[in-house]
Length: 163
Ligand SMILES: Cc1cc2nc3c(=O)[nH]c(=O)nc-3n(C[C@H](O)[C@H](O)[C@H](O)COP(=O)(O)O)c2cc1C
Image (cartoon, rainbow, N blue to C red; front, top):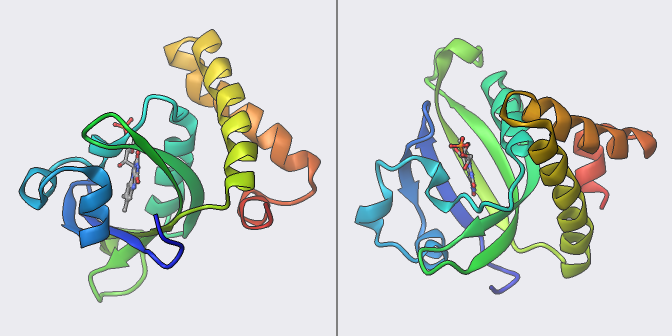
């Protein structure tokens, strides 16, 4: 991936893909036809903790901007890391959560040193999620992440952007 590449996708309010740019399509390894209309989890990698996506969805559904590192899987099983920004799109009737008509994401290739930091955190979160069992997984994964974030004295967003 070149540093000047932006990987872009848009979804409807339920997370179904409505737009993918050429770079997104190339990384995903599917045709545009195979992607559009599918849930965005078509690129979900099994190494990703569930609690990261829980944080993503609670953030964007409440009208806020999410930043996060994501390991995505391609059709051929290979993976690629991104630093993603995800934002809500509104109908034009105001920026109230009820006017959200979809979501928009722009991603770039992260610095390898930052990937190493995040990869280690996600491994710890995933382990905590597995040990907690399905029902308590989100709480357990979130606790691991927030304990790390809180120790820095920053909030999640500042932590991610300052890595
Ligand atoms: C605009 C937007 C972009 C997203 N980008 C990704 C992504 O790049 N990779 C990913 O695994 N999930 C992404 N998601 C989250 C997925 O919708 C989904 O929640 C996630 O893959 C986990 O799958 P699950 O919700 O079925 O457990 C995105 C969601 C939205 C709304």
